[in-house]
Image 1 (cartoon, rainbow, N blue to C red):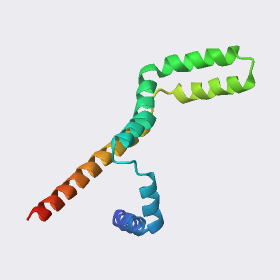
Image 2 (image 1 turned 90 degrees about the horizontal axis):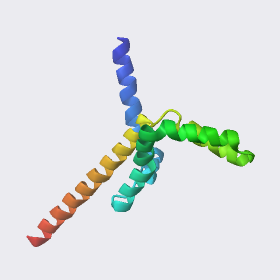
Image 3 (image 1 turned 45 degrees about the vertical axis):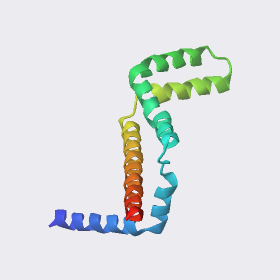
Image 4 (image 1 turned 45 degrees about the horizontal axis):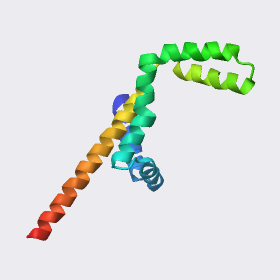
Length: 126
């Protein structure tokens, strides 16, 4: 009985979230544009850094660590430390997944918009 109750609570929470106007506006505000600039932004800020992290993360972290030890400037040392922490674990599967989902969203929206335009063109021809 506990599993069914949990499912019901989860369904209610999803319905409340889907009908919440503030949440809907938040999702609309973070939605990438459905053009090549939106796709390029998703690739540049979500996908490419993770691929670089997976391929060269250890080398970048080692380079940043050695420069942090040699730097006399505290600001530069802090920058190298942040760079080292950013790449020490390699790439992030979560960020890569988010990037792929955003790209899928862009493609779906473009296809949806294309289909809508195509239907409206067919209606005007008749």
